[in-house]
Amino acid sequence: MPSKKKNAFYAQSGGVTAVINASACGVIETARAHKDKIGKVYAGRNGIIGALTEDLIDTSKESASAIAALRYTPSGAFGSCRFKLKSLEANRREYERLIEVFKAHDIGYFFYNGGGDSADTCFKVSQLSEAMGYPLQAIHVPKTVDNDLPITDCCPGFGSVAKYVAVSTLEASFDVRSMCLTSTKVFVVEVMGRHAGWIAAAGGLVEDHGIPVVILFPEIEFDEKKFIARVAKLVKEHGYCSVVVSEGCHYPDGRFLAEQGTKDAFGHAQLGGAAPVVANMVKEALGHKFHWAVADYLQRAARHIASKTDVKQAYELGKKAVELALKGHNAVMPTVERLSDVPYKYRIGVAELSKVANVEKFMPRDFITKDGYGITDKCKRYLRPLIQGEDYPKYGRDGLPIYVTLKNVAVAKKLAAFALKG
Image 1: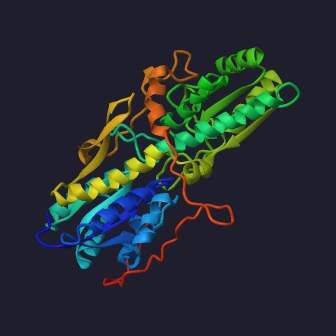
Image 2: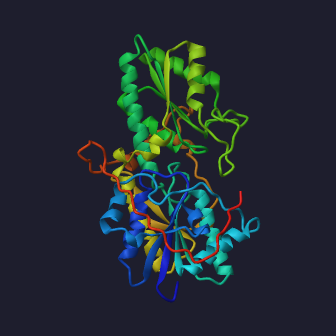
Image 3: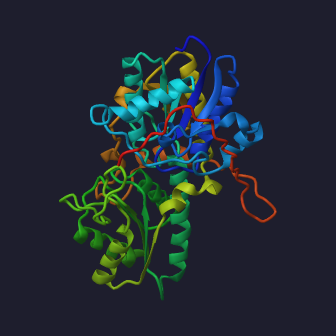
């Protein structure tokens, strides 16, 4: 733990969510409440790139009301990035640069808000700071719509995406149901989830509302013949059906239905297009009229229908990150520990980053029905509490939500410029 009052650095990483700013709010408000131990909170402009290029934001220039408004504002208030630091061996200069910037600005606390890749980065930074003899407490603040971080029961961002997908699937299915006699009989919606089907699973909650639905998970190898047979059966029985397909749905040989042959900044296959692929399969095999949609950014940006549970947990985990740092913890991540499903109870715990970094949590097989196309009651018990409640933002006279845009005042640079590679 730093021997004197140090400044803190906070950054947002990867795909932003409807509630990542609630975690930022939790970090900054809690740090401000401990001014005797923490100096200023600097934010990285565009995530970790802001630290590497010494492009820091002075959050002390923001009013208390502006920081409080972050809790109701979607996206990343300070900018995020898809920039994965390579291993210490492959690019030690970047990690050393981080330490140089932290040293120049008297930063003793590092709060990195992101998913699995940022957990890995946070862990490596803590290791290097120790090796270089620079006191730095690195705390990872969990965030990922994919819900694939280990140890924690759920990840901030997921509950709101799950709520959006469940609501959207329900509403669109009502539309299809009303038109199926003479028009559309199959509606396909594509959702995020590269390797884990948590988001797609949320679409299965509409089954309890009488909606015939087929879920295509990354965890279940895609079988076109069986899929078509399932759709044909549901349309025959109900006159229509909806299909929720994860972007990570793949064939037995590992090829993604949605693979475009390109890579993203992390080296992952660039996905997008599973919905039209699936819809055309239905058209060619059964001749049914269809419509398809890709939820894309809409699902993770939909703060207007955010889960109250999700917002609350996002704030609490940001707050807990600061509290852990003040207690001397390092290389850890605050977690959600579920105590019961009904009534829903949980507590905030802590996990070692060495057990979080580079580990993905997939859908348990007993969360998926035996036929591979639906979710079990056990999965529904898991999902329901996470989408409970609404935490609506205030609306303006123009009928739109009132979201905050921060001033994001830059901190004066003290070091020479640093060129990013790749």
